[in-house]
Amino acid sequence: MSIVDAGLLDAGGVQLALDGPLATITLHRPEVLNAQTPATWAALRGIGEALSPEVRVVVVRGSGRAFSAGLDRSLFTAGDGEGGPGLMSIATMSAERADAVIAEFQQAFSWLRDPARVTVAGVQGHAIGAGFQLALACDLRIAATDAKFAMAETGLGLVPDLGGTLPLVRCVGYARAVEICLTGRRVGAEEAERIGLVNSVTPVDELDDAVDNLVRALLNPQPNATRETLALLHSAADNPVPEQQLAAERAAQIRRLAELSALLHNA
Image (cartoon, rainbow, N blue to C red; front, side, top):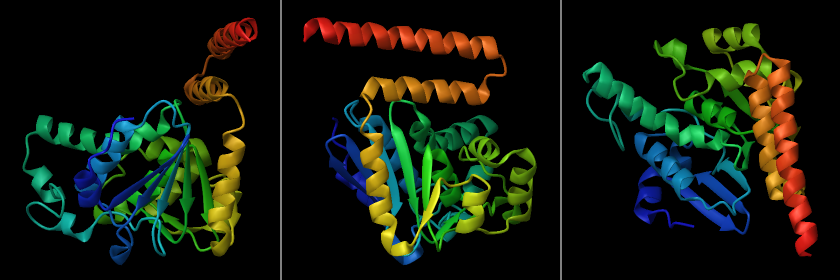
């Protein structure tokens, strides 16, 4: 794989650990509850661009007692914030430039939804705003019992703009997504599991083990079978035409059978 620049990771407060087919990304700014800056997003985007196809599972974690408490407070001041342009700085840009800047921020999260690999968020403590959207960017979420999710943007006069709206609606439905976003209330781990926001809840001191067990299970299937299945599930979530989804399943299965047949003949 390409090497992610260490300076980029350090500036963003992000750590990357590689272990064969597993990559673990850790937000490492525990003194500010892993609050995010544009430098954080640059580091995440750099990781997404550098990971090799051999990486099949990506785990996203936060160090300390929180997953991520959202945007760093410096971004709300006039001018540039820590690690990049602040919100009011973006407001002074042309519409085209502002659109391009926010699109770059979104790329830090969007690659986590690529069917090339399975992504897992291990969430403890606060997952607020940008932290909530980072968890939503992952395919699967395991929450510790102390996890608290909230979409705080509307209370600040903003909107969720890091790709969180679509996966939230997919997880909990339109009406509940409206209520969560517009009230900004905190959703605890038990409720999050009940409404489909997380896959499972575990005691805080067992979160690492629960994530490790899930990773082992995810690495069992053949890599291309996993990728094809993920792609089908992604398209099923957006495809209102059953015939098109059936055709996509047929095409994927034909590719799988061709690969398996080639493996048998070469054995």
